[in-house]
Image (cartoon, rainbow, N blue to C red; front, side, top):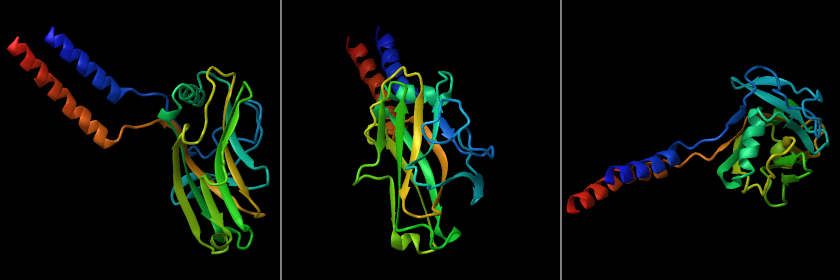
Length: 230
């Protein structure tokens, strides 16, 4: 009975460590935009093609701010599509799934044409009509001011937040799921490069993994001691 109990405890802990879900990443290393297109396009429809360029040895998707606000998106109605699977899984566990992406802005590419402000965010939309955007006044993913945009400098970073942190509450089992990128600003030639756009489960912190590693033998020792006393 004690061996079974230990096995059960181990199974629960190992499951917690190994539990995973669908991961989808758009890294553009194929040299194309991997299905990203114009805002609110029909699922699977050809809508817009984005240029993919090599930036510091990595292929990245170039998106021009053209006053659409929702400047680029990928939408899928295929239940076997990894993006559909990842977003459907996230709809049942918004705090356990991340949306992340790398961004890159080189203001020297078009001096004087990046405007006075540039802001980035994300949005989601589903077949039932649900729409939400991570673009509140005080919580934009990225915001560059006029001095930065006129500097001729390069700005870059990584955004990584759970669906919950973004305020997204997706309904499950939708006819389609849409993930989009917001670019807001007033520059006539402001281009943002995106890379490694990812939806994935939250990965346990190393500290958590260490606790699990300690917990298993500790639980085993406790059970053995109880068995001996019995």
